Image (cartoon, rainbow over all chains, first blue to last red; front, side, top):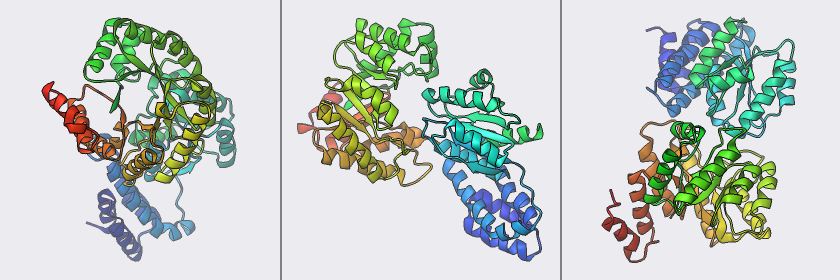
Length: 210
Length: 264
């Protein structure tokens, strides 16, 4: 097993200490940051995603793997600045106004980062104007909106309506407990993700279709 | 233990379908089953129906009260829906719920101020979800004091310190439990109430976590629960926990439950 595979497996196991150690070793062996990131760290998270989706592993295990991935990122970060790694794309994400839930959104962020996206988190209770400003500032390919309450679905609809008028505009990806594909179609968002792992898969598809 | 039966919630698929079809038999059956199993309040929620919520809630309240002795927990953040339901509701309803979020607080307060309605007071503010015991107690303190100043009796307030998933942070269980203790000892006469299934979100075999957490919360003083009363293991565990917590003189409720076959 080469060192990149060892990193990947340590991410899957959620062993932050090992990931750190192996990432260091990989650098010493002459691997570039891009390769360590893609084949090691993201490779590990790519195994985690489907397992989570199939209920083979559970939220705390995903969190543990995400922590391990971040430990590896910290090691390779100094190299990334100087190397030619291209981020896959930028995603701005937030929970809509009136809604204070962030646990699901944070899981989605973790899976998106694990899949190689740069994610800008606007947090909870985000008014439409703040989403619009973030689009101007960060020029994301995708905008992710979360709503956990039936009462804030209305707000999601309002925000999406405004975002749809922007030119150019990012693809709009929505999710949250009460959200359905039907609702997504009704309000004219580009895509709906049922869970964190699907969110990453769908984000990849959306980028491909850009 | 004051039990609010949680099953008549439109976000549960079978119930949502029954509401939309105005299936009186189904709705009544679920209400009766819950009452028989020991529910003190029947929660009524049509929150997934954006424009018809008020109509459906009114229909359910009438239907349930025309056919049973139930009192309802009116589950909506919308003051129009609540007022409409209160117009037809007989007896003292529970309002589910008020919180310290400004919009919600301003809209719900006029409905309950100076009345004898029961109210669930959710420990949530515009600053976001509370994380620590202290966060919760700070919100609870403001809610309790503001409500009392507006002529809501202490004994009609059910503070919900907000359960969060243990899967995302191992401290969430104890922060909640210690908040229950702080509220119950700090404001004698007030009640605490929660829906606790959120604690097991994201984990397998949720039932054992829910029951264990309920028992731990009862030990800290929790005296109200929004729960599925048809869950016999949960209901039996609640009786046992109250007895063990010293809230069952001469083990009367425990023995009643035993004789009526309710300990499994």
